[in-house]
Image 1: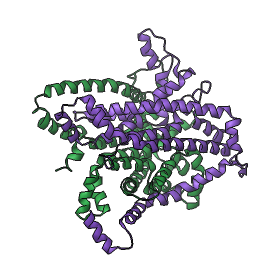
Image 2: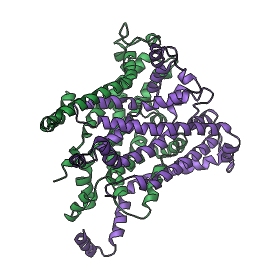
Image 3: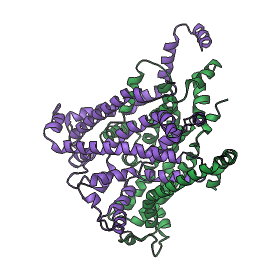
Amino acid sequence: MATTQAAKPTRRLFTELDYLQPHHWRRNIWNLTIYLLLILGSVMFILPLFWALSSSFKSDYQVMEFPPQWIPTPIRWQNYPEALTYIPFGRYALNTLIVAVGAITGNLLSCTLIAYGFARLRAPGKNFLFILMLSTMMLVEPVRIIPMYIEFKTLGWIDTYLPLIVPAFFGSPFYIFLLRQFFMNIPRELEEAALIDGANRLQILWRVILPISKPALAAIAIFNFQGVWNDFLYPLVFLHRQTNYTIALGLNFFRSTYTVHWGYLMAASMVALLPIMLVFFFAQRYFIQGITFTGIKG
Amino acid sequence: MSSLTATRLIKMPRWNLRQREAMLFYLCIAPWIVGFFLFYLGPILASFYFSLTQWDLLTPPQFIGLDNYARVFTRDPLAVKSFKVTLVYTLAYVPTDLAFGLLLALLLNRNLRGIGVFRTIYYLPSVLSGVAYVVMWMWMFNPQHGLFNTILTYFNIQGPRWLLDPKWALPSLIVMSLWGVGRSMVIFLAGLQDIPAELYESADIDGANMWDKFWKITLPLLTPSVLFNLIFGIILTFQSFTNAFIATNGGPLDSTLFYVLYLYRKAFEHLQMGYASALAWLLFLFVLACTLVIFLTSGKWVFYRSVGE
């Protein structure tokens, strides 16, 4: 179902543009070459993932076998139901989703505003503040985390999701910088036309800049979701009760006891990978060249 | 724009246009400034204070001035070695990651059927984090039964011992990290959407070939994304930790002893939090200097359509 949805704009473009052009056969050969290159490359990218998938159907003993079996005999289907009940997987997934939705909302709101300021408005001290903002990412996390813990403890935020969500509403340097680079690449004429029409800066950001920045916003949502879903250090330090745990902490249960339950770990990792895969697959549809700008011209 | 300015000036005579714009700028970035004071400044200042102390995390820190910093340069060859390892790793990894990320983005920036599936395949490895990622590669690099050496035996080549060989361990880690090229690919892919199709169409009319179009349209207009990937590549790569921590733990013969891995050991294994904070601050200053140099020279090679043209 997902594939047909994604293919829709593609098909329309094909029929309207390519087949009408005289050189379409040359383009087809070119497309074929690209498909071949992509298939060749994807083998390298997918082999380890395939091994992980196959391991998720093995017993712990089978995982350790050399040479490894690509298709395990017997196939241990029960790894999946067993792994998902070994830890309260649904609960952890829900917890992580709460953090992700909160953080993504916060980042999209704050980072667009902040990035717009850095990209478009002139003010004394702007470059200094920008470098200061970047520099906050350069201090290694293990060193920063202890003072942060002390701070959140005095606020009474430990063992809540607040330390993981609230900072997002004040912007993250990674996303601010990424958006700033995009905003700076939008020609000023688009804004000036709206300014002449009497729009204020906020309206321009909302009505002119954001609609053409969908690819960048999609990239931010993807990165943020993935970041929250995989984040290990911060939840580990700020969350204590096991019922509050996120997915990444939950996966650690498979190896924190005396032995590593490889089969379970791989099965649960595969299930944990699904949401990121889905989010990416749907968000990548905004990466379709030309669509962003043709709507503006004319 | 001038008529608008005039009416606004009549309404608000106290501020001129320039001051109003500056006010608006500070209003826009106000969330970050507040956040900086709330969540960053405290921990940053605290870590700087700790870098001037001797602190085992159990007893209160004791102030020792700049002695921690002197120790890095004069009495700790391992710290210097770990810095060199990280520098070599960064110099090799960041440019390769940029090149592959750009190449993949160009290949995947097409309205082909099923392109979403390919994009997902290339992106997926970069979302696998920590243990699962590294464990897979340890399996691929296994000298006896790993995927690489198994393939090499088909060609009668005796493969190296990869992660177990001091000469091959660091290159192996670079290959391992390049598998996560999906991150920079996505940024380039999003950046490519910013280039108007009209430019390519008029280049076609002028009879430009693909090579020309890449060097004269795509690359110049993509330089904002290149700058982003370059700066963040450097910031993140100098802080590399997880892969080496799990795969090699710094060995063999300290050939993959990353700076932050060494810092982590000092902080949490040897309980020298003060010394670790000093190491963190030296790295901070070095990366900041690199970023400043890149940022200040970026005016010469980064092209923004809102500025140039």
